[in-house]
Length: 282
Image (cartoon, rainbow, N blue to C red):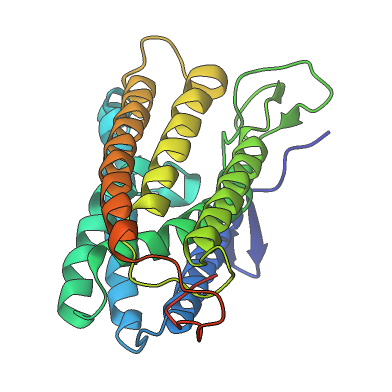
């Protein structure tokens, strides 16, 4: 069984499947978040230039952290530092650069969108995009597999000998499950028990759950399927996942306190009263 092709030619042009996958994933993220903004009642014309800056920051940050985590290799092969078409983008590096960029530019271009609400809106988008990106990114790149395996579900990847754990497929399934959980939580928060719209509640629950679940997932994936003992990059990924879990847990505790106080001053609507309308997103 041959590995999935990672490059093909259109005439003299060399096309990397990894790059095509990333482009499709970014397009999906833009389209889905724009839709969620619109359904939540926010303007969207400001988002195009902001999204381009976010993409640039994400790619630069993802590549920079990957290179730093594998500095021993790139010291001997400095020409490969910019070769992102071979793979090598750190999700955590992308977040470290992209999230502050998004926050700053959103505050300037769309001040009516509270940052907490915006982060709750974007969390499901990130998980859905990561699910798609795993299948269209690492699954189609050089050395995209996990540890060697003799199991029937093992796959061949370019640049890696023998069958490998299809970790990108595992991660896509995990990310999609987290996405479904976030959407379920969001829909419950947006409705009173009688089914009417609930708006104005403190944000943070969706973001906190996303941080806890994705951080736990990413850390365990690295430890069980991808990591190598003593490798700096692997240790950093596991540590970053734990930090994300702790940060998400802190957000959830604080949000729960704020939500409890909000509910005490905003009782459910009385049966028979006109339903309230509010901003929702799916």
